[in-house]
Image 1 (cartoon, rainbow, N blue to C red):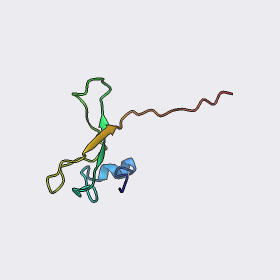
Image 2: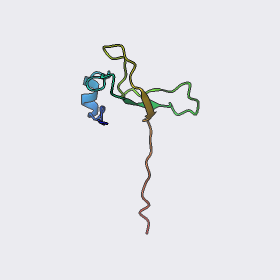
Image 3: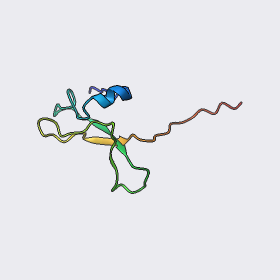
Length: 83
Protein backbone atom coordinates (compact mmCIF):
# COMPACT_ATOMS: atom_id res chain seq x y z
CA UNK A 1 0.00 0.00 0.00
CA UNK A 2 1.26 3.44 -0.88
CA UNK A 3 0.22 6.54 1.05
CA UNK A 4 0.66 10.12 -0.11
CA UNK A 5 -0.47 13.49 1.13
CA UNK A 6 -2.30 15.25 -1.67
CA UNK A 7 -3.13 18.56 -0.02
CA UNK A 8 0.22 19.53 1.44
CA UNK A 9 0.46 22.88 -0.30
CA UNK A 10 0.68 26.39 1.08
CA UNK A 11 -2.54 28.42 0.94
CA UNK A 12 -1.15 30.59 -1.89
CA UNK A 13 -0.19 27.59 -4.02
CA UNK A 14 -3.42 25.81 -3.11
CA UNK A 15 -5.57 28.61 -4.53
CA UNK A 16 -3.67 28.39 -7.82
CA UNK A 17 -4.03 24.60 -8.09
CA UNK A 18 -6.98 22.60 -9.27
CA UNK A 19 -9.13 21.13 -6.53
CA UNK A 20 -9.64 17.91 -8.47
CA UNK A 21 -7.85 14.62 -8.05
CA UNK A 22 -4.87 14.18 -10.28
CA UNK A 23 -2.26 11.46 -10.65
CA UNK A 24 -1.83 9.12 -8.72
CA UNK A 25 -5.32 9.64 -7.22
CA UNK A 26 -7.08 9.06 -10.54
CA UNK A 27 -5.88 5.46 -10.67
CA UNK A 28 -8.87 3.16 -10.12
CA UNK A 29 -6.72 0.95 -7.85
CA UNK A 30 -5.81 3.83 -5.51
CA UNK A 31 -8.07 4.60 -2.54
CA UNK A 32 -8.21 8.35 -2.00
CA UNK A 33 -9.10 9.97 1.32
CA UNK A 34 -10.67 13.39 1.60
CA UNK A 35 -11.40 15.82 4.39
CA UNK A 36 -14.97 16.34 5.60
CA UNK A 37 -16.41 19.57 6.97
CA UNK A 38 -19.24 18.93 9.44
CA UNK A 39 -20.10 22.66 9.43
CA UNK A 40 -20.07 22.60 13.21
CA UNK A 41 -23.29 20.61 13.55
CA UNK A 42 -24.11 17.15 14.90
CA UNK A 43 -26.41 16.35 11.96
CA UNK A 44 -24.67 14.53 9.11
CA UNK A 45 -27.02 15.69 6.38
CA UNK A 46 -25.22 19.01 5.96
CA UNK A 47 -21.69 17.56 5.88
CA UNK A 48 -19.62 18.38 2.78
CA UNK A 49 -16.15 17.67 1.45
CA UNK A 50 -13.89 20.44 2.77
CA UNK A 51 -13.06 23.23 0.34
CA UNK A 52 -9.35 22.41 0.44
CA UNK A 53 -9.86 18.68 -0.21
CA UNK A 54 -9.57 17.10 -3.64
CA UNK A 55 -12.68 15.57 -5.15
CA UNK A 56 -13.83 13.76 -8.25
CA UNK A 57 -15.03 12.74 -10.62
CA UNK A 58 -11.79 11.84 -12.36
CA UNK A 59 -11.30 12.24 -16.09
CA UNK A 60 -12.48 8.63 -16.38
CA UNK A 61 -15.67 9.38 -14.42
CA UNK A 62 -14.61 7.66 -11.18
CA UNK A 63 -16.09 8.99 -7.95
CA UNK A 64 -13.33 10.27 -5.67
CA UNK A 65 -12.55 10.31 -2.77
CA UNK A 66 -13.69 6.88 -1.63
CA UNK A 67 -13.34 7.77 2.04
CA UNK A 68 -13.69 11.05 3.94
CA UNK A 69 -12.69 11.75 7.51
CA UNK A 70 -13.08 14.82 9.73
CA UNK A 71 -10.69 17.49 8.52
CA UNK A 72 -11.96 20.93 9.58
CA UNK A 73 -11.55 22.49 13.04
CA UNK A 74 -9.73 19.46 14.42
CA UNK A 75 -8.11 19.98 17.82
CA UNK A 76 -5.33 17.68 18.88
CA UNK A 77 -4.17 16.86 22.36
CA UNK A 78 -2.33 19.60 24.20
CA UNK A 79 0.44 19.04 26.68
CA UNK A 80 -0.05 20.39 30.17
CA UNK A 81 3.18 22.23 30.92
CA UNK A 82 2.25 23.07 34.52
CA UNK A 83 4.65 21.41 36.93
